[in-house]
Image (cartoon, rainbow, N blue to C red; front, side, top):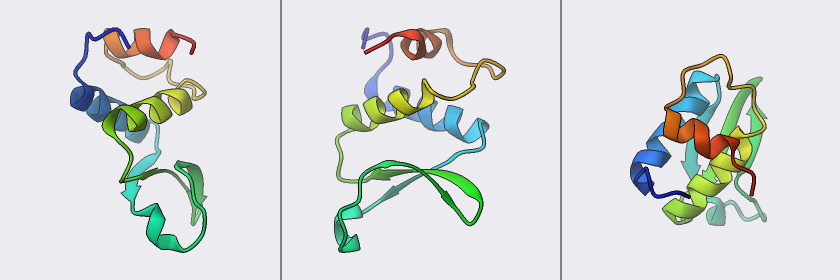
Length: 91
């Protein structure tokens, strides 16, 4: 990342963008599920969710959300220029 946005601010902007796209972002303790679960996109009762392991570090959460949001149609919603730049970058 280019350092233009603090880690916590970036996380807030990523969650905000996902929610404006109709995707609820939730942090869960995936270790307590008893099954091997990974952070990611899913549909629960017909509604889109992105579940994050709450034990992940902030940079890892940002990375996985960025990777996912790059695949979504976000062109029609306002995105901060610094975030739009990050979304446009390829890993």
